[in-house]
Length: 602
Image (cartoon, rainbow, N blue to C red; front, side, top):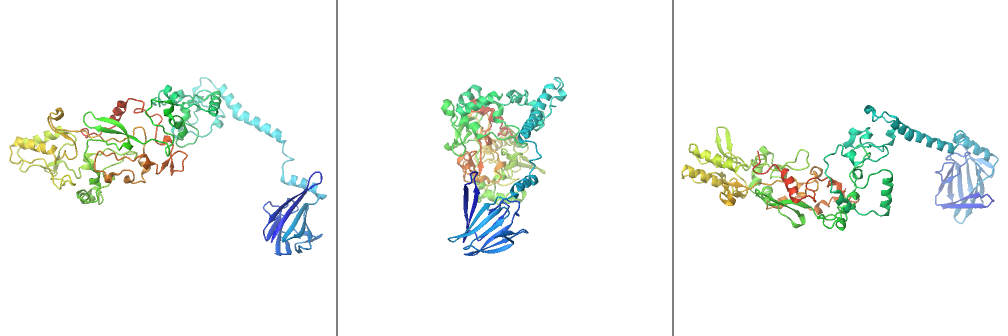
């Protein structure tokens, strides 16, 4: 059972226009509200006026839902059953509804009836529901509003700016009405300049110039020489050239200005990051224009980015050598330290037993964990270099004598002082027992010691000077306190006058041109990125490659869990260590940032 609604209207020349719609519903609503199945825009009707129900295949029931009724064959009623095979004529306000049967459908033909009251009804509607008769003409209103906007938001600020005292520095920011020109609040970095427009906008109707930025940012490093940037930048297409022309016409500085990257008035939080396109305009196809560049093309982190490169040391010593190497080549970083991660992180063996023994005192678990030795910086971004006294001495004690309640230890990081302390020890009254390095502290764990203690003396029957020499040799030889962790050079080798220990290099950064924040990745475990439990060689560089990062990070417009633009990891003003600077300059800068070398510890 269904209804067919036919809306019949007349054109200006008297032709009928019929619009039909079929509704397969057992009940229809009728009224003035537009939400009804049959919408009749007539003020004589209620918003929800009546229901038309299908009783059986040949009968419909029409009933009023409000206080007003309807007409059936000229008789007013509030409910009526109609035989559709015989038909009927209903009237709702100024509309006539004819009921008929056609096949299995009930036909409702609706026609607007011309009534004497129609004109007055429209006037009544305009008077009751409209302010048309009271409002001024639309054109006059539009021009009045345009004039008010021009006066309030353009003429007043310009007049205030032009007539202010030229030398009155106290009122330099007292232009009236210019607040309406701001597109939003300043970022957190420039919040102190809020309301002080002329700090940056030094000339009226002229975009911010680099000279205004450099008033405060005096030491900002250029990304590259200007001529080289001009060569690297891709030629704009026709649309880009048109936009550049428009920008130049309205006083915008040429490409490469500070405002191209640092966009202000976009919110009170941190300054919005630079769009990826700003970088890829050059770096996406850099080799096409700069044939001599050593930089690989990078257009999108998720799909077009080279493998990471790290600054590693390959010749430790007094004059170390460094090189930048791709992680694809699995480079080694010879730090000068002998340290097997797998032994210290093993869940079995001497180290694990020592961790359980010291657990209550040092806060260790059943085994050593990364956090027991690697401690984050105050901001959580990086990790501090390993410190012998703080991180190692709980197990690897350098104690060799106890006087009263005071334990004497050898000076870590000072080989000459170690030699001097041992000679002074043997030059005094001969000790009743040869000093055992670590005897007053703990037995050294791990495979390297086989459970023995550090001994600073192995020849008890020798004369006193010989005993001192034997003790010194034992400390710096295999099985001694220094040898198993450090590279030791004996006297006479490499021109050494005495025993020496190769300085240990502990960089806080390997990727000098990228930025990584450990704190932002605190939800991850160390082992999810660094394969330390399986590393048996201290030279292995335990850095994750780009594929590891891509499990979460993708390009700026990717569907990755963390869409990442270039600015998330790279700085435009990179400073010393930039790829176009001499290689040794990067090394010197890196060395200056590494105060914690062996031999420099306090």
